Image 1 (tube, rainbow, N blue to C red):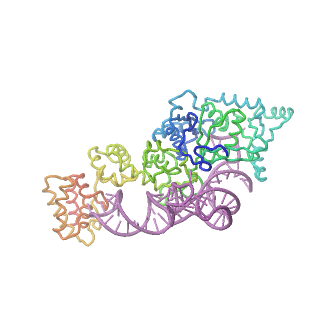
Image 2: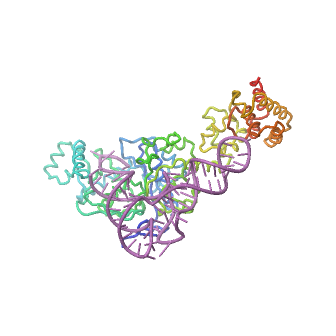
Image 3: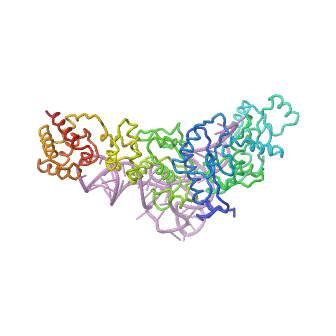
Length: 511
RNA sequence: GCCCCCAUCGUCUAGGGGACCAGGACGUGGCCCUUUCAAGGCCAAGACGGGAGUUCGAAUCUCCCUGGGGGCACCA
């Protein structure tokens, strides 16, 4: 029997088992732009794993690609993680014993280990030009082969000297993959994955600009930072056996590894990406980058819950659960290996759930800037009154402009006649409703919802109309909207003065 | 093209040989509540991709096919 992992789906049924080494895991994003929700999910699962096992969560910045480097994205990453509540124990801003945590500050280390391999004939200098490489790639693929043809792997000293001179000492360092046999990597979730070594490439370890590639930094850093478990996206599976061979070459033990499934576009075509995400059935742009979710008015707790609902399940037929509950229960064995289409409708629902459950004061704080961004002047007292009227009616924060804007609108345009006059009514009956309401409201001692209802509801019977007719008339007259929060609450918030003035205006419209 | 991974309602998922004529959630439709819209309650439609095995018994284990995804850079 092969070695069985406690998380493996295939060979083993044991679920929660304490890892036998101290848990140290890392999220290692590359600062090449705003962070993607897929990356966030990897970060979240890794963090959950660390927190569940009482381990250490490390944030490491993989900034070795000078061409794609975008300095602003580091802050986008740290701020985004913090916003979601994903905190790190070692990394930027907090430091740690295994730093530095920016790979650009560790280049000497990488160079040292690349040379270490070179010295032991486990790696070699490659002088091939990008042009040649491009050509070889095409030729190889046409032949059904993969990657580099290993041209520089066995140069004679004379050839090497010639190339050295020709290129002016420009070379990359490539790893020497075993040419025969096969390599097996044990994925914690999938079990053993075996690759024929002929499929594996002599990957570049050190670029000609002196910077290391991901493959080198990753292995070196994971080793020296004493990473116990690697969690990364599925797209890395094919490099896992190469990394395994590197660990072997260094004589280091490879951390346990798990590849997490990717998120697919709503169209179901390809993995979720900014370029191809497209639009929902409702015509909304599908958010992809974390800050897009934030700007679209999703709450961090809803996003976290949502992310744990795809590719992982709580296990109790429950869809709504807190981070603490997730930490307590988080287990890799509940990760679903199938990649999933991004169910944005479910996020909308979940966000609505969290909004409804939210403390009204906190919601007010979140909603105020939304109103202000939409150009409204927000009075705090009124906002407090409006919150209960909109809380159950919005799914995302910006929805509130549509649902509650009427309470902050400075200008008021009376409704057109055809909107004001309700079904099976005419100008005369509408005027009667308005005038009776006016008399009634004018005489009211208080103007709270309860009093209003007590006073206005009898009008329905009195005038021989249906509730919808009477209240619909008043709704239009006082708000000029066909759809609003409940009428009496709405009137109470608007206030006696405004309500009376608007009803009078409506009467005027009828004349 | 080559290599690898994956496969349950439209979507996210539960399922670990008998507890499954397959459970939950979103969405959809209907009803209730109701002054509109929500929220809430109830109900409904809706899936094991196909084929061979193994077994007394398969959504579950094996193989093949099909489908989907990922990778094949001096990017991560």
